[in-house]
Amino acid sequence: MDFDVVIIGGGLVGASLAAALKRSRLSIALVESQPAPSGNTGWDGRIYAISPGNASFLADCGAWQHLDMGRVQAVSAMQVFGDDGAELDFSAYQIGAPELNFILENRLLQQALWQELQQQENLALYHPMQCAALAWRDEYAQVTLQDGRELRAKLVVGADGPDSWVRQQAGLSAAPTPYQQHGVVANFIAEKPHRGTAFQWFQPDGILALLPLPQQMVSMVWSVSPEKSAELLALPHEELCAQVAAASLHTLGKLKLITPPASFPLRILNLPHIIAPRLALVGDAAHNVHPLAGQGVNLGFRDARELSRVLLERGAQTDCGDMHLLRRYERARQEDIVTMQLTTHALKHLFNNKNPLLRNLRNIGLSLTNQITPLKKMLARHALH
Image 1 (cartoon, rainbow, N blue to C red):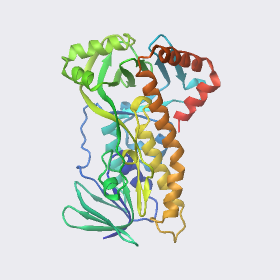
Image 2: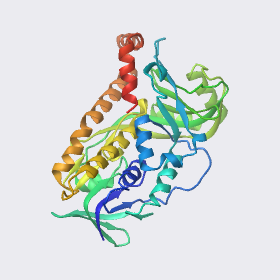
Image 3: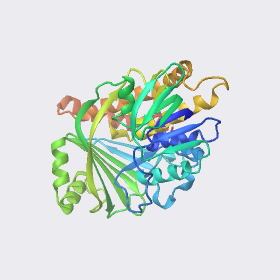
């Protein structure tokens, strides 16, 4: 079976890339190891902050229109607190934007994307299906599925997550660097209204974020040591609520847990190349960043936006796997990826440090940034993309 593009991995980024190519004349296959997302109506503990630019991209894909907007929260302001009284605040009003981003559940967005994919005429879906082998020839790449079927493609896209099998097969692997931190996530009902504000506290032993959800709910992402993560997961629910409320300085009052806590290890992955002959990587297969800026999935969507643009704008006779074409994609994505990795990496190490001189500098830096309006506007506008 011959295709122009085979996408391996049907998570948010891989699915968005397939949907972005729906109006092209390309023949596409999507291979996903898991069943299609179910219609589970319970709240998902995994939450994403989607930038307005990526919301527009998802609307172009046809997915945003499928969302239940009653479960989507627009963020109008953000407050960031240092560990010594410093504060930095952003607002959509200050930069003339309707919102800074949108907070919504992973499962909700997965369902919306797959609803669109299942109606797509130029797409063949293989799910749940594992890949058994991947080989490259001069004229095509060959994907062998676990059931023995073979797919040939001009271009293979690895969208299969941080432990990418595609990346390993291509020999593009570089060892990820662990942060020695875990991200602990859970959702709560807050006693006080959040008013569409996202909160973040930089602390000596971790970084706590409370992101607004509809109906006076908030989603927590708490980056802490593996030992602290284990302690938090083992706590009775009432004690966990009390610890999160205390760590957030009772900004939103008492908290009530509505989804069980979970955790995942944090790391950075920086690859020298995200392309190879007849191969492109997107999303977590191409890069990992610290979640303190909430930009991991946004980077991935911008990968899908750029790769789809390059494929859609190529000449009619240009091979989808042409290296000159793929280099355009890699060059276009390099600055965005490196900037976000360097920024989050530096902030993580700056605040996860007990040096008293650094403590003074980081808090002075937050306070100064808060007073320089043009700099604040520049930082906020960058997050809109």
